[in-house]
Length: 354
Image (cartoon, rainbow, N blue to C red; front, side, top):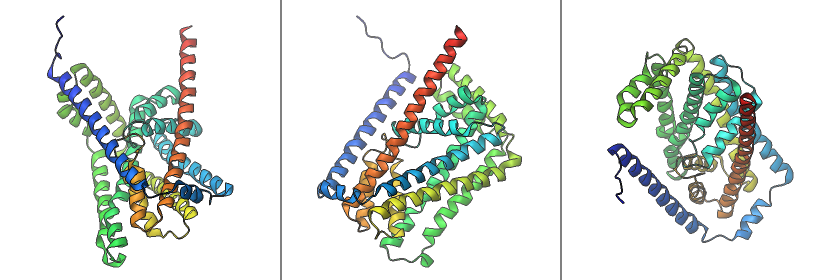
């Protein structure tokens, strides 16, 4: 029997890209597992258990409540963006939909991305939001998230000099100027971008035909044109959109940093603010590693960062366990709510057909 070859170069390229991504993920997992096992080689798990036992029931409830507030604040930004686009959505349902999207992102390679299509779908099916507005709201929400995440990671070189280089804040322009420069450049690019007549279509027309089939290209181009229709309504509100979104994001990030500090403080009251900031930057950077749930990257990063800061290894591992339990709890809630949404939509479709 003759075995047919791949019909064209497009299919061969897609297969090669798929295999390359999987080998990269596997190589990263092996490397991270090796680093983590090496870090664990000198720790007694009884010591980690003793560190976690320092937490009282009241302290655990405090951490859980603070995490709930953080989820609500981050969802507030998405809800506010939809309101600007002219859609009033149920805040509670939107929050749970965000957790469902988080579960998808968390359990797929790259903890920052993956759940966005689910967010768009639930906005359309469950909240009555038109596809262009749904795509734009999710995209803008992600822009704000990545923007502040980049500022935090950009602070890492300055923190390295501050903690280990013996350079004071007043003498360290890198600590101050790098995040400030990123903020100013990003603001200018954002305001310029939303004032362009066809910013997204131009990119799709330039690059889309090279990687997409004709039918798929037409579909993507049509959707992008519709999104640009929504985008054209924003220039008059560009400043308010930028300031409002940044303010809500800043509140959320301050709460997340506060929650991270509280976890570390409860495990090790001697922790300093600079040590906490250093470890937090490593935790955020770990989420960029393209493996599910940043597996191994978070653990190795915290062991390295806190170890360099002179914090005991059991404290670092205790912190990692708290972070993992928190994320798995939110992912479980998101998966459960996603199942409720799925069966609800399926039942509705059956009723409409019947």
